Length: 114
Image: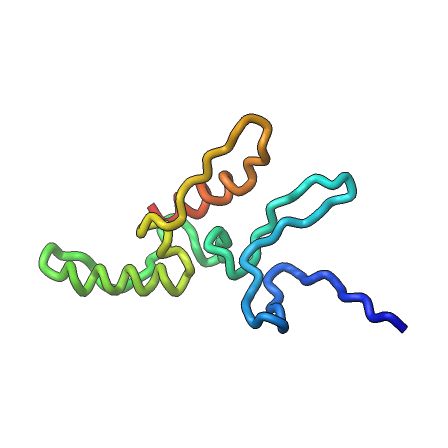
């Protein structure tokens, strides 16, 4: 009996390579590709993430920049959002007719950070 591999679910860890799926493109019935955000993706927004949410208790007072910077960077790294302020997660450039779901996801996550 031939064993058929089942497709991985979003956010599931691939046991062969031992790394989480960050996002993947899935084939729909009409062969159109769809952008899916996994829970390990920097585009993923947890229900407790949003504008106005306090990410650190360290308040910048003009004299404690190094402490405040470290606290903010640590909080963003824990949320997998540090790339937005470091510039490593850049806004995608779309050409005419391309799917814009990745761009929308980037804009939503970036608006929470900025």
